[in-house]
Image (tube, rainbow, N blue to C red; front, side, top):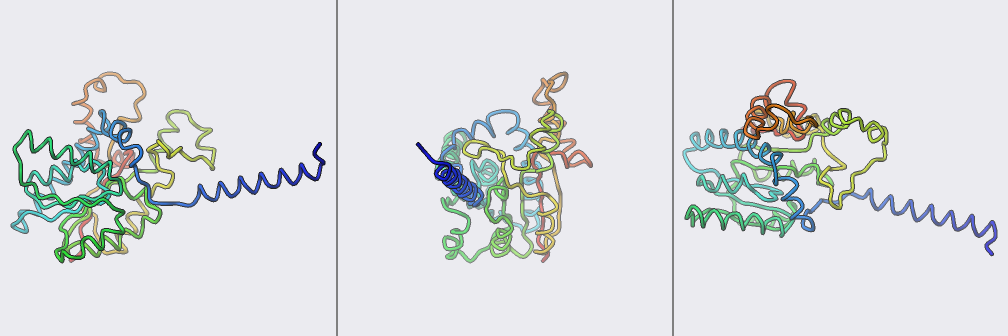
Length: 295
């Protein structure tokens, strides 16, 4: 039979163990989707949400890359950091640009490479200029050291919110971007989390300051960066914002699908229309900022 002293000691040990577990959970590390690559592909790009995302990014990036190509009189050198499935980067390679694709997950890049193989098969494009690096972005420094040419465009889509120290990636961008190059940053919008849960009536979730998504499979980041924070980084590193767009500015907020919501093409058309308009773009589940470096 346990004494009251033994019970007290046991409870104290349990509290200490719980505290240690919480501290371990709070230690942030760069996130890899290697273990859930199939889930990521299906959840992010398996439906209309992914089609909207790609439609907005294609419009923003392809228009700007075309302008840059005309200005420079040559194809661009492009780096995609934390590329995931790398759809936009691969399409830029089909346009004749030289592309370096990086991700921390080997499984994600295997899926991207399978996409390239399918493009080669369908379009007979045998000379795509793509280089692949499986590693954290911090290890790219050594891999890129042999090539002294910098990049005209660096893309980083849905990466900032999964980094342990997202502000530090700006130094990496500075080092590898040309003096008149541009950044394409797409990141989760924390304001959209609050707004969607307000609409859904999830007030208990919003009142819970200790709430954390289960990031074993969840694709909702626990440490998103607000647009004001990203804008402050860009200003501090001497970039000026060329354009901003919202991705999924209304689609996710419509629990009752009626009228035009039943037509995917109409949804994409309206998402594109409102993605760059005030105040709607700031409601996007993700935000895209294209910023040019001051020469």
